Image 1 (spheres, rainbow, N blue to C red):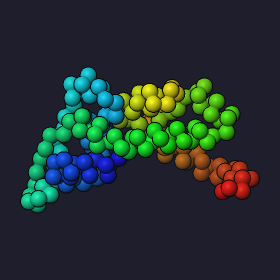
Image 2 (tube, helix red, strand yellow):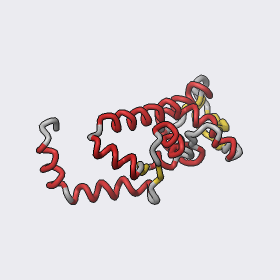
Image 3 (cartoon, rainbow, N blue to C red):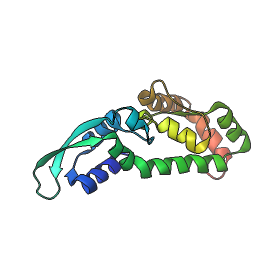
Image 4 (tube, helix red, strand yellow):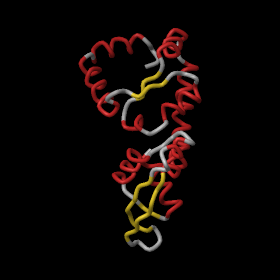
Length: 160
């Protein structure tokens, strides 16, 4: 997502920004759901970087509408990935997901309206984890605690 924001700013504003600025934009004004940015009075933020043409420092005002455009393709890929996963999941697992919904975790989960957009595109209830940023690290830690079980289960399936 950060790379998509960097590419968007370079193409549309001739502004080169670093990963930290892209991350700040994503967290502060990132938006995925068209119309939501209007309700939020089109959030804006200054982005500082280097002018691609002159090489001099430059600052532009970036809006949540820009973030929708910047993130549109990558979010489309995520939604397509969710659809493909559901189509290829065993029926019991797919039924569980339909019944219980999807929980978004990680920094990207905090993008305004991402949950609503995924819900609209898939028809499955989506919620953002209460501690979305820490949830990925906590889950990884719990998985590592049970690494032997994971190895045993994956060895059963010859595809892995």
